[in-house]
Image (cartoon, rainbow, N blue to C red):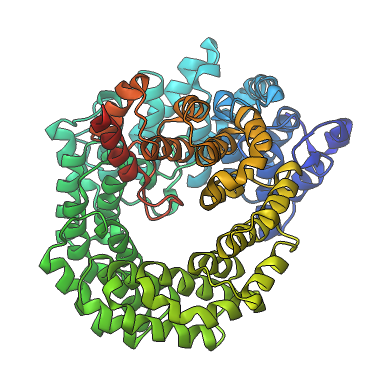
Length: 624
């Protein structure tokens, strides 16, 4: 352990991470000893960045340990947070840091140095287990749990003795629960399902469930049901390990047993959905398991009257209701009620959900309160209403819709068929003024109006400074004129420059087909040497240009799997009518898995990718 007076003895300038040299580390550690609590919090935040940047242990982490240990004992405020920083660093997993293409070779060595330093100061930190501050005691339990394997044999009995005393006598139930979790790490946890303290019972059930795995025993489910609806985490919501809070960890654990979890969620919601725990647990089940959307949506609807943030729950409903072939009338009526009676923000989210539920009443409601996103959603669901939607889209575009809303409005034209051509003047104006220019150029290519104004605007756009607008405009120009020269010149320049993300340009080549043949050398180069996404895009482009599967299918087969890029490869194989036999075992698992194999939640970028994975897998298997 080293005091701040010794900070300058370390050559911090030779240490660092992706942020650069660690010269600021000693300054930040000194701030921890000041009287400004807010400044100390900011310093800790910055220390996380320097010592654990983007999940990677830095070379400065080990040398910082003796100083952080001293601060954990002597700083005036935030000592618990310093201990938590050490615990987070101690829980680091060097093997889970970076993709194979970019291994962080120095991280394992830095982590080994960090562990050696922490082992050296651990005996001096053990008094924190008896600190008067409840937060320090909890953080100390978490730290020791993170380094249980580092505790020397001669210290182990002393540590266990102190932790057993906390479990038996600490006045804070959450400290006792943390002590139980640490005793479990040492193989000394007592049977505690019948403890008089709910927090301890819940911790005991959680530890038992983690050991046993699902399906959980009835006695554990009973504890979760009784004590999990309103756990008293409060200020004591330190995780036992990792970055997730206790609540997040418990929710994820319960969601591993979907039947038990939905039963618990139903009881918690019926009891008032305190803290939205029941509806949150139901949502986690939908994110983890296939074909549970109907049950989750019923529970979500039942939870709506209890929540203080109905908009958030309505966003969840809007997301999952799309996957129901026929949403129930009760659900649609409930959404209609919120869409017509709630405050504006809540009503808009309810209306979005009602549109996704394909309820005909949504059309009139959207027309009475139109936004770009709502119009785009209702156009996808009710393309037969184009005669009512197109005039509205035209008025909003003409009124100067912003770039994001203009893009949504132009996208809304796509499913509306020939009637959407009436909006051509407004789309041209968007390209001319630079509002939603990419969406406008792409739409003009579909309309194919070969006028001097349109072709001139598209040609000008191919000379813009950004690659995506250039290539989109270039392909649109080809579609309008039939002349590939501008598109070929633009793509030669963009693809040979080596910058940007070639995938987004390559997948735009489909309308050109064989006319893009002069680009084949570049496409074939990227087919062999690009990253996964680039190779997948190059394979698709090669198919469109040549009409041959010989070069593309082996690449797509190699890339196929359960990731966004891999899903795109599977869809390309299906479009090409190819179902490689070597993929069939994997395809059967993709098609039949009860769990989602791709992330799917209101927070993911690829919407319902797992549902697409199952659908395309079944299609490929059906091809034989």
